Image (cartoon, rainbow, N blue to C red; front, side, top):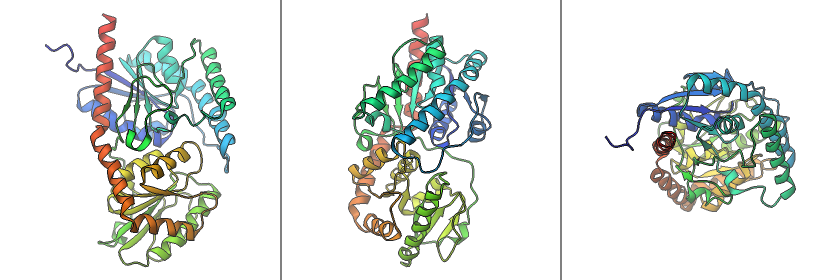
Length: 393
């Protein structure tokens, strides 16, 4: 028998209550189970349970309370001091309980779920980082040493409270980091990362979303607008401007607009379809362009179909991702707080009429196709699980 042949492993996925971070791993979990591995999840419920619908251990809790309008360091400070660090503190007991009950061979830890890294290091278990966004590998704080020191201090506090010595960055595994992008889009990592694996997006089937399919014109190319789950007044302003842009743009008979408006800011009018949520994976293949805020999943799902983007980043990793798209030549960047209907319409005309944007999007799509996606992730997990078992003999 080949000792390197995959053996059934137990894989524990440690995730935050954020759809954009969980969705790439849903495809990985499905691929792992198809190859005979046993999978469980741990994270704040009911959010994580609602997202994955699989075996889920509860850990911590979650309440969305980010104030509207946070930008720059204020947004970063809130992310760490009011979300990531408290989430880690709250999740550690639940992750420990999940490990004790499930007995995993390997932990797959989302980059922002530090509880998984803390527990893995505390118990001496192998773990892999799931980088649902490539922004951290670009070292966005490299030119801001004081803020970088503050981030490191947050991690030291976590290690001290949970009895886990060391100085390694909890965002990056000492074994391997799986990145759901490609070098062609994200560039080579700037930070020192152990064994980065660029696998491209992991696209998995999602729960059905109600949509008025009958309202789509059969031969129309779609212009999709989505800001994820952003429901702030600023999001409403941008969507209203986008609706005005689409009303003008979609006077062309071959175009039709679709706007995802979870906050209920807009009133449907004319040929533009306004819905609370849209089945993006089903709609994007019919799209001529996508307007978004630069969420990693939306960016990668769009480029995986060779469709160009108009991006208006708001905060967090979104400006980095917007710059990646522009550098790749696959889209146009707008200023979220200042973009008006004319700006959005002009950007859309550019990416729809200039074939260079589609050609660039298709180059990124080709890199995604070569990268391997969920199957490549599972192959790496199998190698690490095998190495870990061999080391323990």
